Image 1 (cartoon, rainbow, N blue to C red):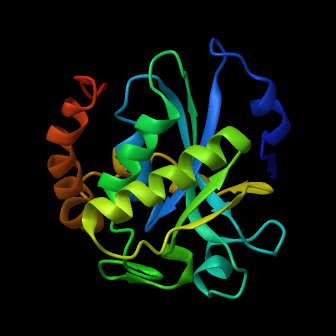
Image 2 (tube, rainbow, N blue to C red; image 1 turned 135 degrees about the vertical axis):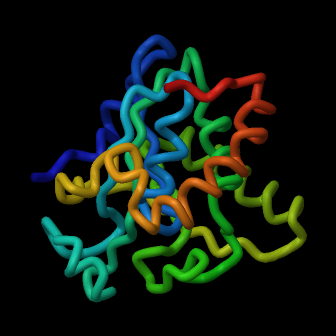
Length: 195
């Protein structure tokens, strides 16, 4: 199943309508668990984008031959949380200075990538990349490119942390990441994680 990127739709949205953001920063299970906690986020779908093969499977993406990254597509209410705030959480949720890896997850599918839906997002993301690079004093490897097509991942990848909290990866990798981000999330306009 292919979900269109909503590129044209997002360009026409007003502040009262839902918008979309698409980010990749390592395993999509981690990013999904982080963004699902934010008020103003209606849904987070794990999937694949940024590659050249139509309708890729998880196994194909893991091979590194499709060019896709593991990403999350976020549907959010800009009246509650801004795209810039989502970018701030994105930077806090992964290491944008490691090329094609996050911790023990290694491969092009784990690269840091921002797939923008419109010119406003492109501009905000480019400024954010410059700002984070200056703030941390290291080169940021995050790709910035337009979203063309988003492919949802297989059903078992959706809501993975919520459905599998006792699984080893969830306990060892995702849970500590969520705990570390707790204070950061609260510092953004005093956002209290929901759910």
